[in-house]
Length: 196
Image 1 (cartoon, rainbow, N blue to C red):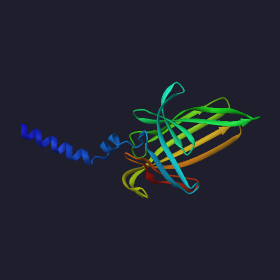
Image 2 (cartoon, helix red, strand yellow):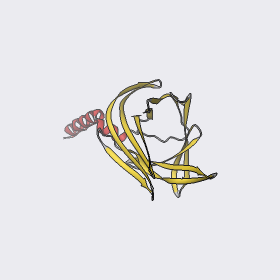
Image 3 (cartoon, helix red, strand yellow):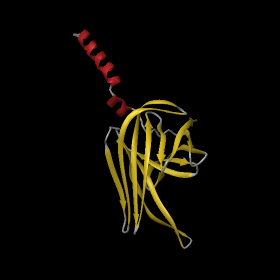
Image 4 (spheres, rainbow, N blue to C red):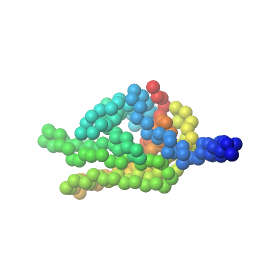
């Protein structure tokens, strides 16, 4: 009886290691690791420095604080998602006015091909729509290294302020235990070249 149980356990372990669903659910595709700094080569800028600073308490919530060059970014890691704080400001008569702000579901986990999610921030005359979709799983080589189980995720943002409409489309490539290794938008890209 013990021999049969041992064989069964070994078979389960062997097959589970090859199961990509198990890898997707246990792999961290957006790790927020304090003290890490990612460097991306960009076709728009020389180098983008993305630093994972650490936990902070802001907006009445415990958040994870990052800096993209000098721009502050705030994330909230939930069990099945990464929430990103969005804030749109404008300068009116010499004063900064906040048009909208809030959290959106930036990435939804586990990553499964064709999975979609959406979110929005809606005020009186201002609307911000967010749509994400996992496209496929593949292998990708970037200057930092070669990665398997990389998921490409398309993100569509649409902003409506009065009569003005603006749309952006991003394509993110996420690798397990690393996170974003490549980002494409408007015929430009950012690609991971170094981690410290």
